[in-house]
Length: 197
Image (cartoon, rainbow, N blue to C red):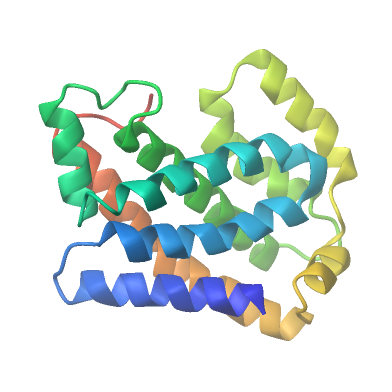
């Protein structure tokens, strides 16, 4: 049950934050890697996001061998003046955070809408999180791909969930991921690095 695994992994991260501790890179990247399956289940519209997200999570997993916390990971890049450099751990962290945010908004939209179509929830999530950072060509390709999205029933079947259990796990992810996403945002904002790049 991938949805339950995702929700539980983010509940663990949220409880670390609630206890006042910093997030470790290893459990963070492990939790993020579980989310990859969702992008895969959404089909061609999110293929680019899946490939990009998986590569960035892999980088963070590698980084966990030399950086203990997300804070120290960011501070190393600040010191090296490489935060915004392509391929830097900080840049990859920001991209992964956007993936988590996109899934959160998608789940919020699915929970708030009736019916079997994922087109509106996915369109809203894409427009809110990814579209401001994408050029015209990617936005156009995603828009075309929205017509190939699975139905909600097909998605739940791929995830081995029924409607009731999926709603619970989606809600759990929304609640647990909110402080985690806020924490990552704050790491950037507290260092005056911004998050809109």
